[in-house]
Image 1 (cartoon, rainbow, N blue to C red):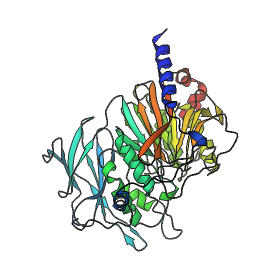
Image 2 (image 1 turned 120 degrees about the vertical axis):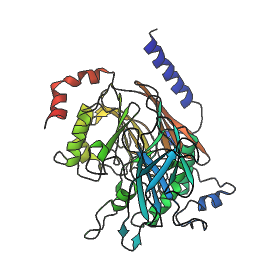
Image 3 (image 1 turned 90 degrees about the vertical axis):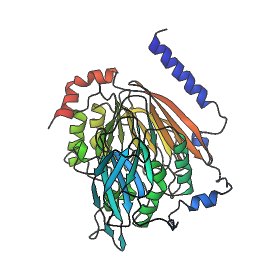
Amino acid sequence: MAAPALLTLLLLLLTLALSSASGAPVGEDYVRPPARPRAGQRKALLGLFPWSKKKASASASDPQQVHISLSGEKHMRITWVTDDNSVPSVVDYGTKSNAYTSSSNGESTSYSYLMYSSGKIHHVVIGPLEDNTIYYYRCGGRGSEFQLKTPPSQFPLSLAVVGDLGQTSWTTSTLNHIKQCEYDMLLLPGDLSYADYMQHLWDSFGELVEPLASTRPWMVTQGNHEKERIPFFKSGFQSYNARWKMPYEESGSTSNLYYSFEVAGVHVIMLGSYTDYDESSDQYAWLKSDLANIDRKRTPWLVVLLHVPWYNSNWAHQGEGDSMMSAMEPLLHAAHVDIIISGHVHAYERTERVYKGGVNPCGAVHITIGDGGNREGLARRYHNPKPLWSVFREASFGHGELKIINSTHAHWTWHRNDDEEPVRTDDVWITSLAGSQCVQDSSSPEFRKILMSP
């Protein structure tokens, strides 16, 4: 038997073995049980919830809500908040604890929203950094020391994926489960804090995710709960843009609502479901340019994240992504996108490779994962019969893990949030389109017309 065929057979047998290892209901047969109380759980959760008081010993100059994100090749953006406006936007860092060999200065911003005034929000880019290396850093020249790990420059690469996170006990469980897995970066396709105009909830969300977001880069895009627009008073996304600055300028975008970046051998595109996306829009023009410049030999994997799903068999949010799909799906298909990840629907679903509403071997695998733990609850109703393109669907909180093994194979797993333990209920190997006949046909006139036309 040829080596590629043998590898495929072994991967299939492994998947079947893992999926049958548990006799518990999975997919649409699963009914979420009530939360199981644990000793000390209430005390632990109160330390994470929005109404918690800050530690009495915390200084106004100490860094709060620390999180990191990629900022171009070999650089990282450190973001934090201070109550003291005199704290400088500076980060000292090095590869040994309390022995900093480098320092970077950055910028700061703040905003007011009705009766709320934010603290001083610092953004500092550090680097160049070595790949796959632990760095220690201190923000503003004071407070606690933090540490981060840079992503690798080559495969394998492990990505944690979660959407519609919020700030509930389910959120806490999901974050704890993510902490247990070995990952290089977290991807979040919108709906972060569920602040919904209550700005102090942005602060509590920053505190909630800091233990994870200060150690690995969090790459996010916006959802509907980030809008917070008040007609005639406030434009949308003010809080989100001030607090979660992504590398949009580094990727040639003019908006923080859509951008791209590369990590190891993966090109990741973050799209904006709540900014213009038709053929005359800036986002459409930027996307066409970004796709046309991708080198699939350097980045054989192409992954896209957006908030509103395009393929959705749940009753919730039916048809909301149709107009964006009509405008942008031909572009993404022409570029041979491998995986499209979305949120919004508070349930999990994975499709076959699809295009124009049907199964297509050169289409993208769509994954809906809008169920990190939000306060609005789960979307339990699905349309029946199940569409031919829908492979697996389950109404449960949880997270996903995308482990890209090499240039051809990636392993996707879905981990149901079942209180104390994450339960893996969906498991699939995905093959990149980069080495397929699909990409080899990309020199066709249709491809050139879609991506190369003005």
